[in-house]
Image 1 (cartoon, one colour):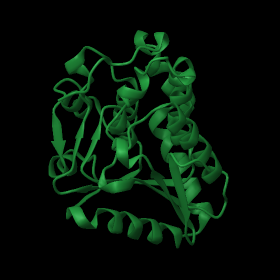
Image 2 (image 1 turned 90 degrees about the vertical axis):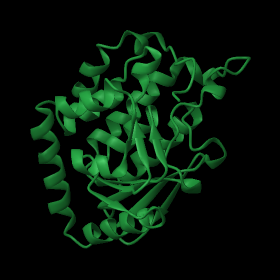
Image 3 (image 1 turned 90 degrees about the horizontal axis):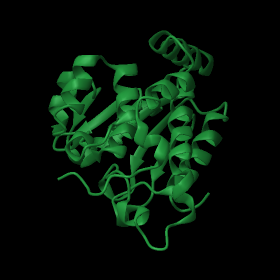
Image 4 (image 1 turned 180 degrees about the vertical axis):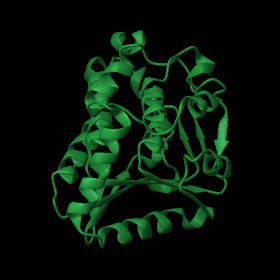
Length: 246
């Protein structure tokens, strides 16, 4: 596995670690490729019941790596990025494993979608999530897909139409976070949840996860993400935001 992500296997569970700490675990084409490969590998492992998603270096994910996207000459992977990133989110949605997010410091824009995807989310007391695309005139199809799949329109409006930072305690109040932990205990709490789930019979875990997703989406996960993305024309053109949200 390439260095953009790391996988650490444990007894019945695993950690999928975003491993670009020098870029605050920002997303680029190679990251998307390695993330998808790692996730598909874990999804196919019958011994794994739960997967902890976390960032290296004490931060979750800062969103798209705009420096990489805007490099000259243009990287070869840019043209296919949106299609590959779509596959990442479909793989997350189709996973029969319990996904547990360990939200440290921040999850911004594209990184926020990776924090909304897990079934359970442990958020740090001072950590925040920001779906800020509205501030730069862009849609947020992956964030919207997860928000409407897992929560409701009122919660989606709170995050996407204001575009501000939503801290751990507020994420808990909204039902997005499962629990809030002291900043230095977020990963430990996420690991504890994974260990607890890993002790359950694997068939029960996968059946509950699959039936829960089917009931909430009322269609296949891929059809759900396709439908949401169809309403975002920029996703079809491959456009990327010109600047980070402040």
